[in-house]
Length: 193
Image (cartoon, rainbow, N blue to C red):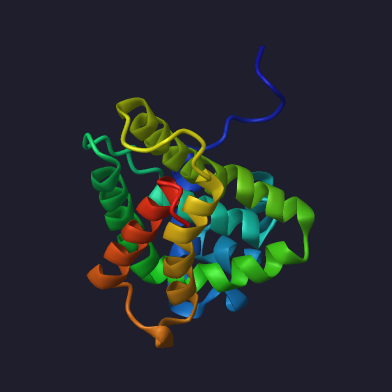
């Protein structure tokens, strides 16, 4: 049995996400409005609101659409897996769309627990679960002892990239930073922190 109303138009879904992405990069998160997205996508405010409760939810969808989840690397070693993960995260956090969106999203979700839960569920939790999978494989291979603090590991490898994405004047997200986060992540996983 089908729900009420017309089925959603996938082309309009795509147009809304693409319009929002373009507006974010061009004008920044602070200037992103549902009206502007609707105009740029050639649709109406209600059409956008049927899909997204507001600009943070739309922005999270845009980020998910653009960056998705990289396949969980399985290189045969935790060092290799973390290096592959950080290469993907480096690309993601260097992207102008991510840099335009993150500071505004972080500010808005801090004031709204429901938005925070949506960001957590749709964007953060799946990525953090990937790191747990890497650590579980490393434990099974005998590379590291069981009981690694995966939450801390996630924070240590992602935090510096996020910090530089929202404050680019601190420096580039370069190979040196990516390698350092891998080294710190490995020390955390091995229980050396």
